[in-house]
Length: 238
Image (cartoon, rainbow, N blue to C red):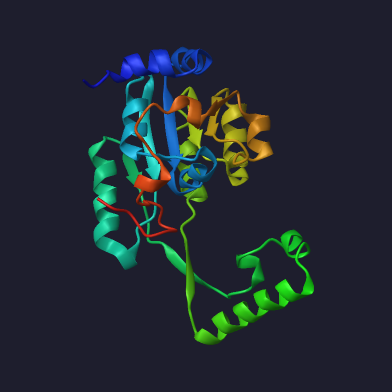
C-alpha cells in the first residue's frame, strides 16, 4: 500500500523544515538538477526526480517548481525520454543543449596532487607510464558542460513579484547576487543541499538551510541497482 505523501512529510521530514515552508504564502522552487546529481556521491544513494517534484507539490504554498537540465544531443532518445518524465510531473523544465569539452589525460584526472606525494618514485613512474600510454592511444575524453546559473538567476528575478520565498536546490556561489537582490526586497531564502556541496556564501545569505537527505521521502536506489541519469555519466535511462 502506498503511503500518502502528506503522511510521509509529517513523519519523515524534520519539523523545522515543515514549519519554515508552511509559514510562507508563495514559494517558488528552483532545482539545478545536474548540481543535484553530484549530491548522490555524498548521500550514498540516488534519488528519483519525479518523487522529489511530487513531494514539493504536496505543499500548497509551493506555487511553481522549475527544473534546469541539459539536453544530450549525443544520446537524444534517452535525453528526451527523461525530459518527458519531468514534464509529466507538472514542473516547468528549462533546457538547452549540452556542450562537450575535450579534456587532456593527465595525472590530475586520477589523483590529487597531494595524493601523488604519498607514492614512492617507482609507483610514480608507473603512473606516468600509464598516462603516457593513454595519451598515445588517442583516447578522447569529453566532459559535458551545461551551466544554468544565468537562467536560474533571471527566472528568480522575473518571479520576484509573485513569490514570498525561494527554495533553491543548488550549492553554487554564482547564484549569490540574485539572492542578495531578493533579500533586499524582503524575500526569504531557503537553500537545499548536502554536506560539503553548498558554498559558504549561500549559507551566509540563507534564512533556512534544508538537508536534502533529511527532506526527501521518495525512492532511493543504492549503487548496485543504480543506472545513472546524470548527463556526465551514461545519460538518462527510461
